[in-house]
Length: 180
Image (cartoon, rainbow, N blue to C red):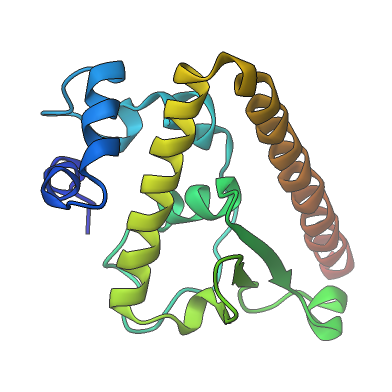
């Protein structure tokens, strides 16, 4: 299912708790009518950097219902969520199956495996991550004193993801070598 950014933005404008952010966002970045997530500055300048080069374990109840590449980008780019790949020792020795992602959301005492989420939970975290990126983008544009710190944080997240991917790729590369 393709996420309807325009409908989500209308939803924000009608939500009394989020309306101010939506209106500020339009003042700074222009009308959001006919826009997509990929059109947004936070996507072009930050989230587009994050991708995952091979499949991961996703919920069985909604495997084709979402753009998992987009969700992974939001997870990797989130300041409010820590993530870890669950690669048990057997997987490290002989990769088979799909790696799982463990999510720990800072505002919650709970943590979850991505592939254990229900359809509604996936939609709610996608909306929360989108709102988070909109707020960060506004701070970067409206608060010049904070811009450098946030951009530095962006670079830290890019480095973390890059290091993690190198580790997983090296494990997978070893598997290919042992098969030959």
